[in-house]
Length: 258
Ligand code: ADP
Ligand code: MG
Image (cartoon, rainbow, N blue to C red; front, side):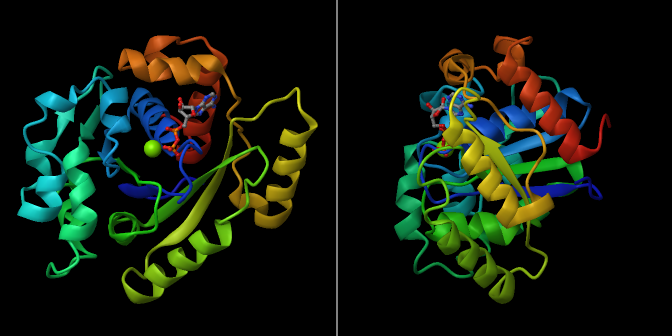
C-alpha cells in the first residue's frame, strides 16, 4: 500500500463512532514514530482529534474554521503534538458553522485543497479526519486528498451506508479531484471473541479484496481511554494491543520506516 510521498489521505465514513478519529490520531502517531513528518487536519467540529492530541479547545487561536472561511494559511494553525514528527491543524465547535457559511463561498469545495497544497511539501503524510456527514466539510476533505481510507467496524450494519459514501467518492473524483482513489479499508473494533467480527471481516474482504488492510485493529478499552489523556496510544500505553496494531498498520500502509 506504499505510495510516493507526500501522501494526503482522508479518513472518511459518514457514520459517527466508527473509528475515523481514533485511526487518524493513532495511525498518524505511528507514522510519525516511523520517522515520517505527519500532519493531522481536524475537519470535525467535535474537535476530537485535536483534544486527543492534547490540544485545549479553549486555547486554540486559529483553527480550521479560519482556514476554510477566512483564508488563514493552514501553516498558521499548526501545532506540535507531544509525539515527535506529529503535528495537528486543530478544530473546535466554530467549525460547525462552516458547513452552512461555506455554501455561498467562492470555490467552496476547494478551500481545503488550496490550503493543503501550500503546506504539503513540509510533510510526508497529511491525514484528514473527516466529520460524520457527507456535507461540504467532507467534500473539502475528499477534494484535498489523493486517497480515501475508510474505517469499518466489525459489527452489525458495518456496511450500511457504504454505497452512499463510495458514490460520493466517485462524484468528487469525477467533478473535483481526478486523483482521488479509495486506497484502503481498515477493519477496526475487531473482537476475536465474537463470530460476528469474523463474519463482517470476511464479508468486507470478499467485497473489497486487497484494498482491505491485512492488519485489523482490535476492540480494546485502552484505545478508548487514551484520548481523555490527550495522548495517542503509543504514548499512553506503548505495549498495549492497540498500540501494536496501529504500529503494524502504519508499517503496512507506509511500507516501513522513513
Ligand atoms: P469517529 O471519529 O468515526 O466518530 P471515533 O474514533 O471517535 O469514531 O470512535 C468512536 C468511539 O469508539 C470513541 O469513544 C473511541 O474511543 C472508541 N473506539 C474507537 N476505536 C476503538 C477500538 N479499536 N476499541 C475500543 N474503542 C474504540
Ligand atoms: Mg471523529
